[in-house]
Image (cartoon, rainbow, N blue to C red; front, top):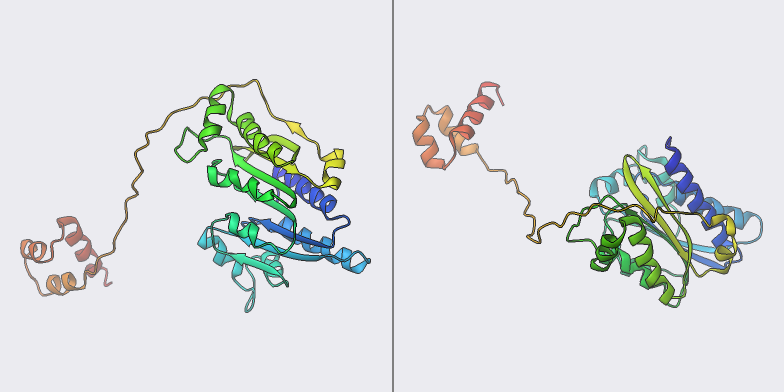
Length: 290
């Protein structure tokens, strides 16, 4: 992908995985590949390298995609035909790789086969309580957890309340780091990196925590670049739930029949309870021969 910031971030994550994998007999990986699949391919290459040169480890990967369109696009050609995404097709077809059209949650972490878990929680959205609390799944495990969150959120109702409060005292990026770090310290996790960046015009923060001795010892991973002095402009939004308009397609076949039978407009509208605009649309479709 020709995006310097994203390429650099993925390289850092891959480097962290290489460090994490050293000396392991088994590893579980959790990620949100989206349309990219670079980390997932790197993980498989690392496993293959270990197998070829005598340091084999067992690997299982749990990959999650909430967007059904992206999910189906990634699956296209994995078994028959030409893949739309070659990296996705290659990864999905590997042994012990699970790809699910679901919202990532703690059940995915609990399904890991190994207690050595490397997870890239690349949400890129608001820091919700559910997503923040995934850090608690590190209990009793040897982990490296990487979180990615948007830092341009408004005071939305889905932002974690504690994080909201911290943001009101400083800014959204440092609030995200501090809130995660408070939870991490209780779990015995060490802050490995925390930095802000902008991808596709959206400000983000990447924060990594680990209790793995190899990752903690690798000082080249210690990147700290969060502006603590800037202040965020926060807007409190209403707690009134947002209701989305749902468009329901009506069966207008009976309207077509009556219009073609030359029934007058008022009678058609009254009989079928349709508006003048809908009737005009039906007539237009008839004129076009639809």
